[in-house]
Image (tube, rainbow, N blue to C red; front, side):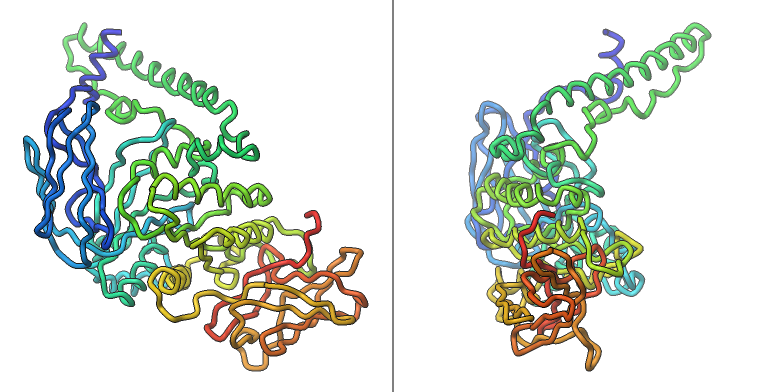
Length: 511
């Protein structure tokens, strides 16, 4: 045991406490603070120590609690900068090049993690990425069994040498906002490829809903089992190193280098990123309660085989984040799954269509918005490179819903239907200027109709004002219509703003 503790000390894992004022990585040079709110600033100090935060001619004070933690709130700041912020207690920290503007969290799985260097026209986009008023903070791949207080990272100023590593969706969203609003934009990027939504939920949220409780039932046991396996592996590595060190000492040789796996944070329990709660704990909880304008989210692929559950899980996750931040119903904007996989010749079942439906149903929550991407995916690549339109469509939602710009932000959304003899008339919201694709004279595609037998066949669809009339010679008495109901549908209904209609179904039949 003594040897084990010695190695811990050699590896820089000492647990000594410092009395100096310290700040989490979020508060560092080049940061962006949210304008117009009582922005929180927090950190650690000696218990009882008074800390003063100064910026833009104002001061805010706080006293560290018994646990050494303190939190001060600034009076609302106007957009601008660069500024200096000082945090003073027994020592003083000065942060440089601080901006004040709009701060958004961008999160999700691999399509949010997807970097600008891999996006469409990346060379030209990177060459033009000279936006010093755009900053991005990217969190590392961290999982945790319980909520962490801090996460590593650094604010990067957008430039040709930093932008290639930015989240592409986050960058294009930020660029659109910065150009339209003329204020600094900060993006806090916290995503992880291939991860399900339950990993991004806090434990309280999952435990509170009977439908989601199975995610946390037995979770402690799973974590303990993983811990035993993890530390057993560390123990094997340590024992092998100690044996080698003993041999070297006996032979009068230098001690062998300590294995990299035994250094520092490697001793922290690393849980698989798909485990419920562990990404919220490791990559979201440390961000709370940093002042933000809202969240953009691109995820769902990892939950496509459980789409019915996602109807409950996704809204619950959003409510959980909002509750944790304590900023009320901040805007939560998300991307509907893009088209992917092989196109099918006939109407049929689709897990991806079901997941898109669950995403669209989440619009029932206040201050949510959806960017439809069913027309800009890639049938052969789950990571389509056109992230420009994704970022722009998310930004349209933000500009209209958050910043009050008078513009169309959504494609047509199904509203209601009327059966008219052997045809069905479909009504939509966001329906001004309905048209079929971009080719002159193009016919509508992607509509299917069914009768009581629940057998869908392709249908003829015709635009009539702000409605669409659907019919088929094979269905004399139609009762249901589906549009874009496939993994990779050929569907082409747009409105005058050039925004695509969201896939939908009028029926509630069991899938």
